[in-house]
Length: 385
Image (cartoon, rainbow, N blue to C red; front, side, top):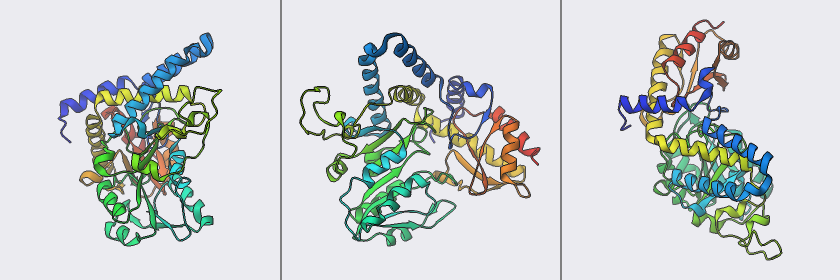
């Protein structure tokens, strides 16, 4: 990362000031559900007060901020505004493709065996249409690209991969996977929830056709407000689903009934938005963008590298890949001789939030986590039963 120690500490300090949770917890569970940022909380509070005191007379202002959130999301991804849909969650974004392609019996989807269920069940649900889901084995999150390529064929319609593995924290080489998908004329879809907002991502340069992420993890927004990206080319290959009054070009002309669907991704936003959720998410995205995604990434890798070193000194076994670009904000580890669930319970009692996945302990540090947090983590682990 091109950031020096001064910029890392400046980024960490500024973000920490925007995270009230840091006053109460050493919070290392952002890969599950993150605490929301103060700008997000302020946006929620403002919407609540305006809604209570003024009703829908404030709706034009909310709609303007919603548009700004969409623009900020497009900028975050290197996408066009018309390629962004505001969706309820990652699952909803994945299903835009799973339910939108013209599947034929004998088609297949290629994914990995360590995917979070959100990126498995929408594809398995296609079995009734004769579509096969091929789950490729991984090793601590690492993908054998040759094996992945060998699993694709002329009937592969989608390759769907998590950018960062939720259990191991392995960050994948998306560009190489995109090339494999496109060699077979398949769409390349990315579940980006465990990296979006804190690691740089350019969907055009990489060759991503579709992407989804909820805002309640690294984006520091509330649950139930997520984003989906669908390239202009993929939009042409997908049928609209969830069609409603906002799916048409003349959405606000209620007396004009004509099924003239939008050609842009917001055609999937058929009904009313989760307005407070998206206003809060937009506020958090603005905060992260202002701090700089590369600065955030450098701060996260700095604290997780330090955490790994101290965990090893404590006797832990690091299970996450920590080489070069494979690193992420997620670190999976084992404490020999300890029950992971009991260790987690003990840590929570000590004001340290972490989690368990696949039988191992998992920390997921954000850019505002500092040495004080790390000290609390190590102390809690050191006294665990």
